[in-house]
Each structure stands twice: as C-alpha cells, then as structure tokens.
Image 1 (spheres, rainbow, N blue to C red):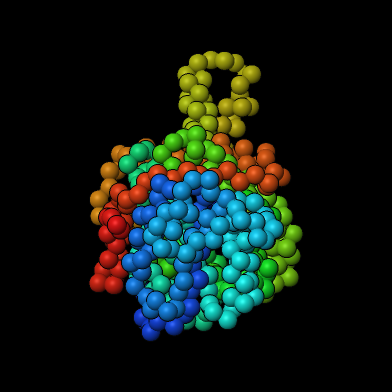
Image 2: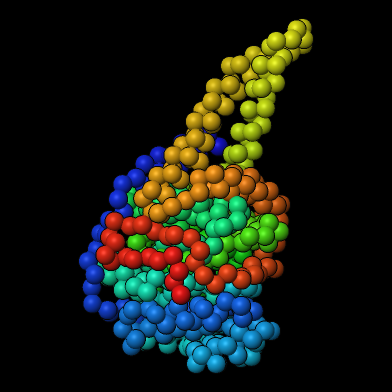
Length: 436
C-alpha cells in the first residue's frame, strides 16, 4: 500500500503545470463512427442528441448511431421523432455476443457491416447515452490522432454533468484529480493512459482485428486497455477537450455501479497477470516499465481502503497514547513497542500522503481546471466517496468470477451543473457550464 502511494505520488509530479496543446489543429480528415450506448434512456436521450448535433466537424466525415439496446421505453421513438439514426438490438437480427454495453456495441458493429466498416471509417468513438460533448471534440481528436502517428486509442477529458450532492461531488472530484494527476501525468511520461468507458476513440482496424467488443469482463474499457498494452499499442490522453456524464446521487445506485466496476477490475487483473508479468520479465526497458505500471494499477488497492487503514492506524496510535498514561504492566510492553517503533512512523507518513492526496492535489486541480468550488463540500464528498469505495472493492473481489450480469446505472440529469475545465488554451477550448 505504501509503495503504491509513493508510486502514485511520483507520477503526480508530472501533473503540475499548464496543460498545453502539443499538436497543431489540422484539416478535418479522420472518419469517425460514433456509437452511443443506450438502454431505457428516454429521460436523457433527446438532450444528448441535441448536443451531438452541435459537433463542429465536416458532416461527411462522421456518422452517429444510438445503440438502442433492448430498451422497453420510448428511447427509439424519440430517436425517430428527431430523425436520428438508431440500431435496435431487440430485433435480434444477429446473435448476442456478450452482456451489457459491450454486447450492444458488438451487435451494432455486426449490424453496420463489421469488416466493411473499414472502408468508411478510421476510428470508433464510444459514448454513453447521458453524455454531452464539447462541440470541437472531433476536430481536436482528429488533429491529435494524426499528429501522434494514429495511436490505437485516445481518451478525452472526463467531466461531470452534476456535482451538487456530496456523493456526486465526490465522484466529480475524483475524476478531476485523476484527469490531471494520473491521466495527464502519464501522458507526459509516455505511459499508457486508461480508457474510461466513454469519450474515447479506438482505431477501427485494431478493433476489428481483435474481433470487436468480445469482452469477458464487466469492464470492457479496462479489458480493452490491457489488451492494447499487451499488444504493444498506445493509448493517449487529451486534456483539452472532453465529455460530461452523470454521476450517481443515490448511494445504493453508486454502490451497485462501483461494485460492477470492481468485479470487472479484479477479473481483468487476475486474468491478465500472467501476460503482464511475462512482459515485465522479458520485455525491453520501456515494455518493463509499462507492464509494471499496469500491474500496479490492476492490483493496487484504492484510496477507499487507504482511508480505512489510515483511520485504523490512527485509532491504534490514539489507544497507544492512552495506554501510555495508564500502568497496564508487562503484558502490553511488546505491543506498545511495536506501535511506537513501527505504527506511529507509518501513520505519520500516511497522514502526510493523505494531506497531499486529498488537499494539495485537488486544490491545485481546481485552480488550474475549474473556476469555483465549495471546498468543504469537495472534502466531505471526496472522503465519503473514497470510504464507500472500500466496500465496493471488497465486494468486487468476492464476486470477481461473476461476470455475466450487467446492472445498468439509471440517468436523470440533463444539464451540466458544474463549472468545468479552465484550460490555458481558452480561445480554443471554451467549456461552458451548460452544453445545452
């Protein structure tokens, strides 16, 4: 745990400073296929469609399809009313390959021609039904993708549509910190970035070669990410343009969502350990570093467990000082010595790490990437989000073999209620509080 924290701190140093664009804006060239995963999304799909229609890019170079995945509400009817392309998996023209979101995406690829897609498109963008995007997202990703030698994937900035409740604020804060001090930092270091499930593009020739989204886990994004790394591919990050999705306000829904994430995470970790460890042992220096980085990410315990362990150690130290004032005799001497020589220094280090992680990093990220923030709410929300994550990590570990049931996260928010990225390229990336 301590080693993981020190490694994350080491990476975070590359997250400081201005997020500058390292590519030129090029002429619209890349052909985009955009698939929007939707299951019973009648409450948000109209706003999403209206937002997607504002994309500023050559209309001849991209197509958007709503993947209406076994919806029983009016999602498809709304698409028809608005004259928007949608693929209805409920028609069962092709057999189902996989569960949940990746199963729906795979169906859409089959429906649209699979290998024949390579004649029409260069990359696939995946979005969720509640997502809003920056209108210049395709221009930015087109330019970066071409300038950087057409990598296997690029993940765009992951923002939040809602952050008013303590829980959703904790979600949003976690993403904002991760965006800068993990994703941006790793991009600057030349390490593979993480795919976040939405707002990413993936090279279609690579995806088709890998037989599409034939994922075995509940975390198709992580599974795809690890496969790209194992195959020697590249995953980049774009800090200057992104998408905005809804964060849960309800703790039961949140626990269910994060348990699914943790189940899939542990599954991918256990199933890919052998290949990554082999890559670490036999690869060149660069491959060793990438494999080490991915292994630590897969098997590192999250901040939720870190918080619980910190609380436990502080409690033990407090009891130590209490006992020190009371004569309990020789019975406690060995344990007291252990606390004094080991636990107190370790607790002190963990407290310093927590101050850095939960105060310094978020405050800096807010200053660089946001306009205003309620610091009390962010602190409480972050601690609440982190502490409850410990529960889902343990539940996910217990249930890691069960990858056959996908539990949908319901959506209801339609407007971006938080002030988003404040970048140094303000004239090029004008992110508004509302994208409607």
